[in-house]
Image (spheres, rainbow, N blue to C red):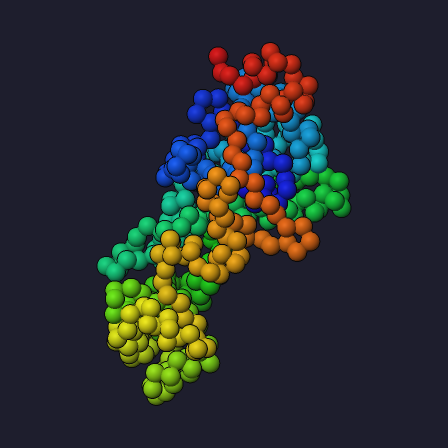
Length: 364
């Protein structure tokens, strides 16, 4: 999606029948389109190919001859069995950058194990960090493993394309969602690497143990966050609240030692509503933020200024482009492909006749 937003021609290969599963999942907008599909497939082209048909495989390989990148997310070995794996594609196009994103990557004892995001987060230790008020693990509310895997793949693809400019050859990019998720944990592995123990979640610096990196309830049952443990922010807030005596306590290690500060802040934040605290903090140099729900988050002036919520000409909402180029900005193309919409156009472009196109796009 990010490559499509920034000018790449992205051809989505879909199977006959239902096509891409995201077409049919989750909430739908007024026109009946899945919101998830709209925000992951805008600006792409759709070609239906039956990869269980030798002619469909040949059509895929012909397409790959003209491509810069192939991305696939089957279980390891599937693309080779189908005849569209890296070796087959690279034999036709040595410049190809072929990215495989799998739950556990292409190697290792778990490579064939099925898993979606929450299972990977569980195995990567991330779920253990998401504790409810009862102290038990709760569902992570963002697909960290899916996103880490895809963004790691994007980085790998771009590095491989840059290397290709130097060498003339492409490469195979093997991305494990588990690897990628664990690579996002440097801020949390301190107790594991330094003391060979699991984090005590409610006592560690970024997961509840630091008074100035925590959430607090307000008088109206809403919440606010403090997110800066630097001495200047601690000093600024505790002085403004008339408790400079707690500055030294806030410098103690996270956990039990900081409880007096946390107790004071809990009681203090309960004295005003969230809106009143927002007004009070307006002229304070402190890392403070209200805890917004997702609707509130998308309707902030800052989000509007950065064009991260975009309404197209038909009134449909889109998440905007997070990378802002100065000289060649990306362009959000709201057009969504119908299943197989571009099959005839693109397959004819690689030399297939109409009857061949019909044969490779419809099973049976």
